[in-house]
Image 1 (cartoon, helix red, strand yellow):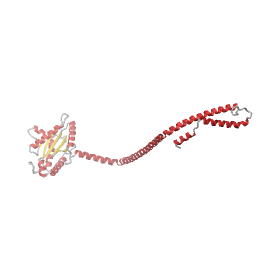
Image 2: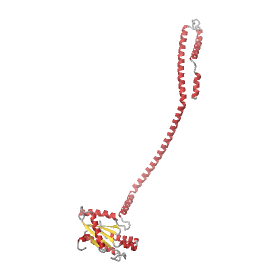
Image 3: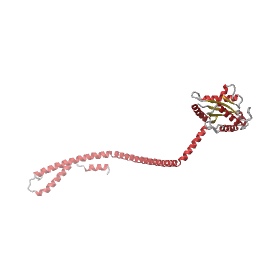
Image 4: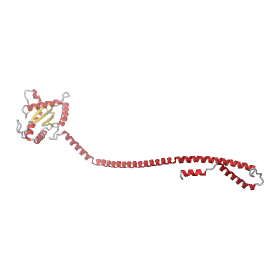
Length: 334
């Protein structure tokens, strides 16, 4: 039943108060008329009714009138409530519909969130399984992996400290090694010797034979030099261009000079042709030598400067020479 039909039915059933009173009197008369044969001798004052029955009837009528008034009030309250519901029914229905749509949207959104969460749980579970497999593999093959990583680290260190062309230690390795030997010989109060070697007329060699031949010459010289110093701590490194440096810890000047002579002779015996050289038909070396007992008061650059100055003088004196720094302060060189 709709709200409009309920309102119409309510209006049709509403009666005036006098109608209810008339109905109640008629019912009472019928009741007393049915009782009249039982008391034929009683005096009647109200349409033949006894006084006691009249009082009862009036009391009953009064009660019925009160009941009718109460019912009318309740009917009015119901009519007001029904009217309010009818007026606001559409609004309530719209609100209910909107609320229902919101609930449906929330249900859909929660379902999507649940599906997303389930997907994430599956991904995490798969990644956990993969990590367990990796961990198991590492445990089973850990030694092999350690060896492989150690080999790679060694290769990386070799690349960082080796000269790409000659495959002997580079300038960086030389600098680090010289610092270490400087500190160690200073602690022992031992001599530290340094040799700087330069291939004579190497620019003319490149111009004559080409850069590929020049690279091959550098490789041969480097490999020959690196084979002569034998002790631990000795180092042969490419210093730059056609220059090479040899570090000889715990070696006095006399020993360093002997090593320089051996290096010079070994290069000469390679018989690498050099028609542009003015000192020999073959590739030769000029060598500067210096020796010091390091101390905390001295700078390591002092050793480098002395060897470089001695090499410069070896070139100035005609190349294919060996000059030691101390000889610069003496009447004649060794």
